[in-house]
Image (cartoon, rainbow, N blue to C red; front, side):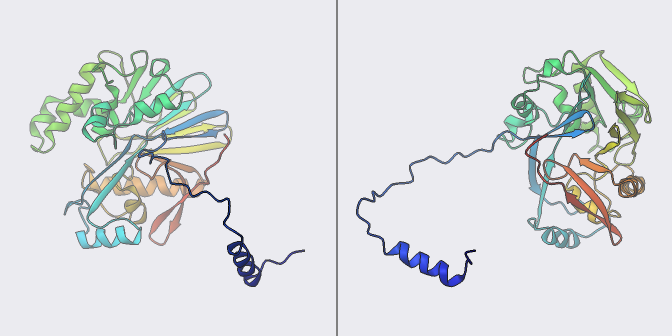
Length: 329
């Protein structure tokens, strides 16, 4: 058996350096830089079903003083540094998922939309492009399930031509969300900063038209996909359990939103965009405690791509443990 030692390595390096250079032709690094990433999608199985996590990209912006409503900006920056992230920057990924149940092709949330692809110069709004790269035809989608009505979840219902992005799909929305955002009284009472969200919801569903089905939490939205009430981030926010056989995944959507890992580590922190902040904290702990107790995988819309991880208790908070990338399905 050959023992590899530092001495033998150095001896081999010296011998290689002593080789004659005759016949060696110098070369230049002529290959151009690519300048772009490969299409972003990742597949895994849940029992007999196939899940495809499809990145919509990410946004990077300045960290506001109120990003976390009940923690100082200094505390948030300290948490960012502890997580090897840049200070004073809000880096937010977006990952919708597609579930092939074997009988239906179901999209859960739709990303920021192709208009954002142009506006962001390609960093966000990638979902429809990456969906096509994953070999998934928008025209073949049977159902689009919406978790809540924030723009990063509904704007992708509109296609690049301004029409419905999934013209053959049933669009399913939480009944409480639809009622809240379509209520004229709620819009008139909303703060000026919140009014654009009401207007955006009406714009998007004006394009979708009449193919909207309202559902209540606790109901199956497709075979093997059960909606779970998870309010706080918005009034009618829903998450989902995808289950087949003994396999289960919690598609948590926005129970931790924005830079989600901050709120996993610090579940008592209140995200500035959570509508009912105390309820959001209660929901977060309830669903994470369930996931920990049942050893359920968690798919997070705002987790680092591909967004699938285990979750475990860590002191007063939680810790994400990413799964190994699997080269097979």
